[in-house]
Every structure is written in C-alpha cells, then in structure tokens.
Image (cartoon, rainbow, N blue to C red; front, side):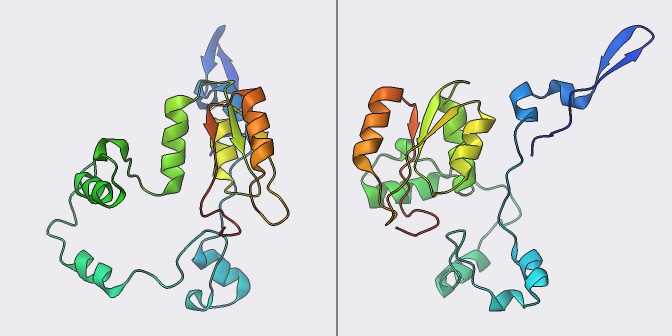
Amino acid sequence: MASTAPVKHVREEGQQQLTGDSFIRPHLLKLSPYQPILPFEVLSTHLGRKPEDIIKLDANENPYGPPPEVFEALGTMKFPYIYPDPESRRLRAALAKDSGLESKYILAGCGADELIDLIMRCVLEPGDKIVDCPPTFTMYEFDAAVNGALVTKVPRRSDFSLDVERIAEVVAKEKPKCIFLTSPNNPDGR
C-alpha cells in the first residue's frame, strides 16, 4: 500500500536528509490505499461464524474448491519446495493447445491482480488513459492510479451489460491505451 504520510525532510547540521517516503513517486503518496475484501478468518470472527459456513460472492471465488483430481496431483508433485518454472511452460503449452493460440502469446501469473498490474506497467505511461466499465473489479482503477493513468468510466447498463455504443464513442474520443471488458464480470458474474 502506498503511504499517505507527507514527504519529510530532516535537516541535520545544515544538510537536508531524505526519509523513506521521499523516494516514493509523489502521486503514490496521495493515493488512497486499496481496500481488499475481508479474508475468511477476519470475516468469520466479525460475523461469529465458522469459515466453512460462509460462502462469499464478492471475489469470483469457487466455494467448492478444486476437484479431487487436483488435490491428488498436488500430492504427487516431485519438488513442491522448489520454485516452479518462472515461465510456466507446461501450463502455457496446455493453454495453447486448448485455445489454439501460440504459447508465446499466453501470460500466466499468480491471479488476476498480478496480471492486471503487469499489463498496466508494461503499456501505461503517466497521463495515459484507460476505459473502465463499473461496477466491476476495482483493481483496474486502482492499478491505473498506481501507474499514473487517467480513468474514463463508462458505466454498465442497469442489467450490468456493457454500453457498447458509449464505449466506442469514448474510445474514439479519448484514445485509451487499455480497455477493460471483464468476462465474467465481478460483481455480477455476467
């Protein structure tokens, strides 16, 4: 999370000494911290319920867990204590075979948050624009702010469908570098 403390300069014997916050990009110091969803252990304590009695619908999580075959495969891993392949070659090859894309066009990461951040860091310069279609996953707007990008919002219709005509107008006018059209969308699953 970005610090919201002001940049402090301490003078010692006529010299200016910089503190840790002074190394942070100035726009990040003004950024409100991202408010993540509550983890099960916090939510269960707050509600006075056991974690297994709670089904959360606010994070596109699977309340049933993986199939038994996944647990079995995890139990037979040869080197679970060693860093995995940083390029996820086997996963990307399987996804390439399934999708018909070349594996060089497939990016694997540790969840959507990491992938969204990586994409924005690769393509956005401060002042660039993105199009966001709320209500949707709040990480698009948060990561845009972290990268100094401007967010143009095109709200979804009352049934949560995309306003494609309005999106096209905004794209033609604003020339964004990124457009986030989420499927399935969080929070409605559409």
